[in-house]
Image (tube, rainbow, N blue to C red):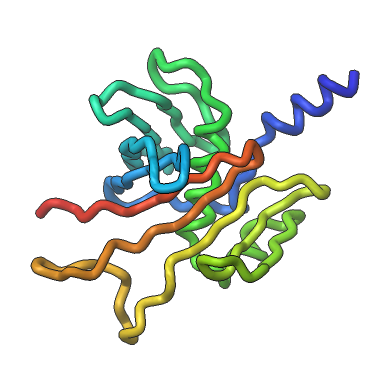
Length: 182
């Protein structure tokens, strides 16, 4: 009976009170840290759809799908023939939080504890519910220029902002937004 309850808790989505789908397609490089200095890279595409839904597609370097999920009416559903992927769902939910302004977190996630601690790479924000870690985030530093949104211009040598994400299974991910191609 306890295992059934724990499994039910693990499958519960953790989404903000109101999720706004992206206005346009967003693409990210996802890097799973496998060892110090080594990563397995994948691509994440977040595509808005009609009716406030969004499609989340994670592929490996060769373009094979690792996860395909749709988010509609605060519910995740498997999209296409990809098998269910609970870790991808958790990762995508952490990405939603990471892309939201910090000032909105407490209102968007009622019942979720958000604790800030100092880490070696900057502040670490741990999201937990009933004492169980949901994910933790290490956000990129705020751009020093007022009004800058962290976008790069052509010829810019500034690195793209990287968000660090740690999931309850201790997997560590780096999320890097990819520039839109005009």
